[in-house]
Image (cartoon, rainbow, N blue to C red):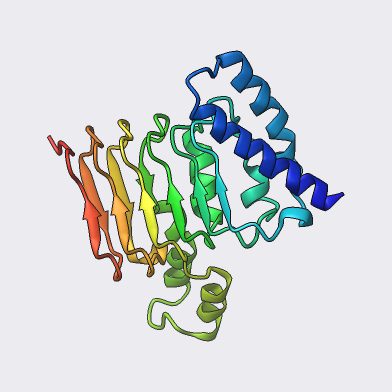
Length: 213
């Protein structure tokens, strides 16, 4: 049964991609396929737990709750690459993914019009703020080390947010633990006002056509 579920999911995604490449796709046919695809996303189990790549570009009817299994139930623990470009996900759904899916290495959010900011300053640093409050003289006391273990480093290497018109602020502090992030693409973010990042491995930052006005 698990193998059948995985095969059907792969077939649905493949068919979706074929339809998107076709000039004959209609809103009705696309909506029907997405409605059929959503139950598979909601019921992902061990049958597809070995999947490492999931591409859901331009899924206009994908709801905000459809991806909850990814970060609330750990349905795809080995998932490394996720593409949600040109989707309708709201800010809270994107924040949930960024906060909990620390195992992702490649994430694409190109053209996500409902994404307002990329702010890992408040949520990501909360456990570290509490650590400093408990013992400001020793960040690496035994209790603090246990907190560090509970909040592992993010594995994210490539983050693409091209053409997200509502992004105004990008904040990725050191405490967000993005030590592997080497590529950040924010090009065509026409309303971008502030970028404050501390990523020791960053070697490519694309701010082309960002206004900063």
